[in-house]
Length: 252
Ligand code: IPE
Ligand code: IPE
Ligand code: MG
Image 1: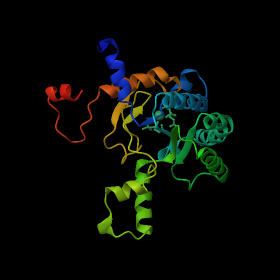
Image 2: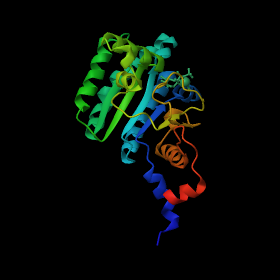
Image 3: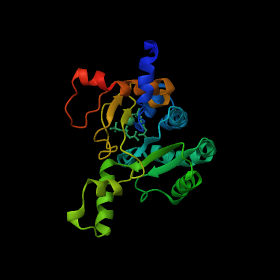
């Protein structure tokens, strides 16, 4: 006989999203509340990111994509931008070995054209050293914007000389920065704002949205589980009609 007390937990486990995307927002407010410079919040945010990748892998999530620096974040004070660039070097130096040991494949997507050679080299090293890992793929969107992504895809399609009559959604998807991953199933934003801020505009077409009040440095495995439970309760329809309640029971 089925033990009904465990049914919701099992149902939730059965519906683990393959791909979770996160807008890691709230680092600045976290620092300000402690009367510390904003970069302190970004540093705390890196620690959270490493913990969340671990938790995501333990839960069977195959792809985690995080927004670390947007195309628009160059508009911030020079000191903060420089701090964020240095943080890439710090993260590769201090966390890459652990990520590597835990089977994390690291990919970094975004516009490299304004990024220094030193930062690009650190990114290349992180990707090369973890390229064979298969447990989870962590994609870091760095100097990324959804609109930039569409533009770079169009440019590469044009450069490849593809006949316009042969361009379809699959062609575009293949040229987008996240062509190595399925579309995100669950899109989380921390920090209480309810907007996309130019993240994954193409890929998130049918993602379930989850907004957390937690500031990113305060996000943890429990809050990830809350988002996963909410995801498991959602009914994804992809444009189809809502099934009758009787059909839902029959298919359970
Ligand atoms: C998100 O945190 C990280 C980056 C944009 C780099 P913020 O720095 O935007 O934090 P808030 O929104 O100001 O609190
Ligand atoms: C989005 O956060 C970018 C990242 C988390 C990297 P922002 O803090 O830059 O977004 P807005 O300005 O509040 O829309
Ligand atoms: Mg913000």
